[in-house]
Length: 108
Image (cartoon, rainbow, N blue to C red):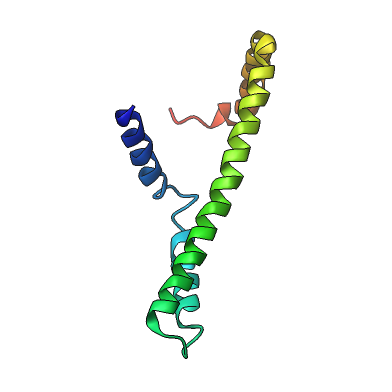
């Protein structure tokens, strides 16, 4: 069980360098940094608690959305298993149709 948790953690770290997530990191850090200096009269420990709270809420929000999407996809996929052969054929046909415009552009 511990190996699976380590593997899941590693996959999460690797996903942070994906093209979908990497451009968000500077904006996220800038947002949190702005929140830290947004209240200059507050003591440093209070600012740290504010930034940590905002970071945890951000993570909780993203986690909730992705967990719900994953659960919905799993439920949908489980209900479509009886149509697997039909869906595989339809996906194959769709793939071929989408590739047709590129068929004349192969280098050779």
